[in-house]
Length: 168
Image (tube, rainbow, N blue to C red; front, side):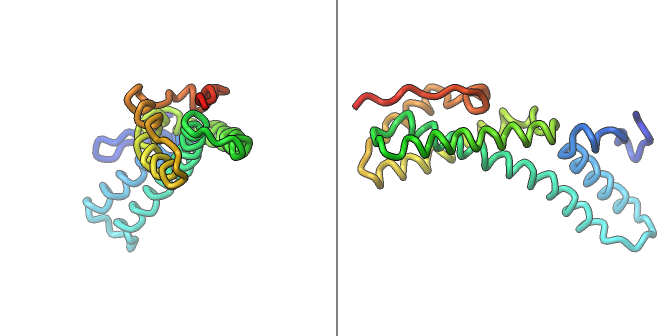
């Protein structure tokens, strides 16, 4: 339900409940617009806008962290010939997927941001895993091949998919 307008910004009373991150972005814009209008209220408009905006960013960062964990361990499962840590990597993937599921259930406004988060996390995490594999004396070419193939899809990260074990 629209509850008002401020300098061309449509206010949606339900946005807080349906898309908290979107609400924080909207509220930050509104606080900055109110500050620009030189409202007489003695509020620290710029810092209020920044703090509200940071709330949404922290939710996004938390989701990105779990996505990065899934990518890291999928890459290790796919590329590392090591056998001993596989069980731990599988457990880590399952725990992170559970957290992703919880974040998306609690904050549905994060779901449309998920492809962008995956796109951001894939190269970052691939660099990390490449270094970790090389530090362990293991081949890292599989990481490069996975990146060249487009990385992992949102469905692979959030679903039940697991890569086949690498050839010995």
